[in-house]
Length: 324
Image (tube, rainbow, N blue to C red; front, side):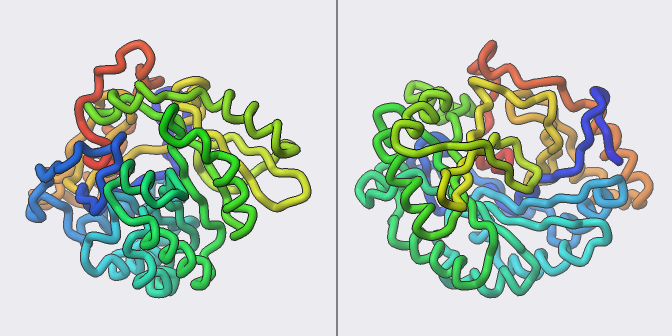
């Protein structure tokens, strides 16, 4: 099993296939941002698969495909089929904003994705447009297509922001009960200028849990998966609600993941600048054994914890450039 210097098992890679996105969520990318990587700088599907094979040989068991928006990269099901065939990979999932999911859900499911996470910060069309610059009806159509395709579970990720969408948390719970989705609330993080601006709207999710307890009977719950959410269940339903709290209750001591960006950088922590470039090594023809050694050297750089609270201006890259 792949372990870092603090004894944590690294079984989970979030694999970014692009830094591009067709939305401009206020906490992720600046409005009008166009300074994306050129495709020549991205790893090819063959290179991405090779890196994931090396991770799997070292003990990684989970891959989540991310972006940017991963569905903006062409021919994605080809990569998914190759990843699903890697020996040792037990869980292959996808994070998406769902704007393109209505047309692709069935193909993605058949290629080998078993479950998806969908970003959805509002159920109000005008507010959704204000937060993301996009159209809510496209996301809802994508969600219904994913449900029809048989994805399970479908997890809704809602970034909770003071004076933006806190009045919708109960509506989102009811929406997820109605459609048999799982719901996760997420705290804003100071990643890049958009993230630091978003922390002006920061909400401690313990307050959101207290708010929900006035409407629902919440009991302890569990949810399979490799993520950091702490779950409760709404009594009388199958709805699990997860709370992802990197700011108020960080979970660094159990962190089990690293991120591989589309341009071949291994990011060891969202809240630190530790990074290990792989692309140059891949493209000079290293062996599989050498590739595994580079991954081991990268994992040795993984820090003990983030420093979002101590140094909120520390991270200058955008979330889309890191991998969701």
